[in-house]
Image 1 (tube, rainbow, N blue to C red):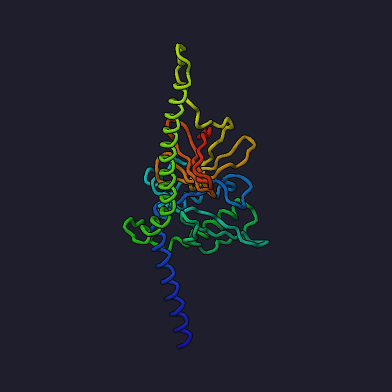
Image 2: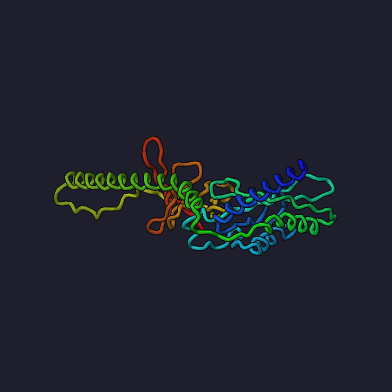
Length: 283
């Protein structure tokens, strides 16, 4: 009897865990698969990344490869997607793989069971192990639920800080522009008063407030936005989609990169106020 109770308890725990994982996954509409996993030596080695995309789609997800054009709703709300990763386990004579899914805040939402292969050929072994890991999804009746409250909460929490930073920087930009306009007016009055009579006043030349950096930064797509690299190549900035068109959050800085009048500008909040610089970015 005790043995039966123990088995029943384990089965109950399994189905409760399965139900919880399913509800979490139902909060998300898209899965983004990277072009290269950490253990791979090159992009799509052993065709694992392409196979992952195919198997996600087979299990009902809308799967995108890193660098694919994003749907409009995903650009406006990056928290609708999960970032996929495949993790390799240790084993001398076995190939072991697990699938991990993280949300827009970098939190692990789901980890699959381990897929195992004893095949000797790498291509066969990795493909068999990956398919084994994806069997975890076959127990779930995944279906995106846009009305799920937990998804709305996740999106709201993830966007709160971004909205706060954007709002503060926009206000600083407006205030700075007013100060600059006032300073221009004062400078123009001073020039007119000091100009000798009888001499033609030359047409005012615009004062360059923002100077463009001649160093080109190349935008490389990531799961959550872009990384901007120079010609070294060195990653200068990592930027995230903010939900607003042509506006990005800069990782590690209280700063925005946005497009205005055809120019890309970084507005960074520093101790002495807001600092703006024009960047030469190639997307």
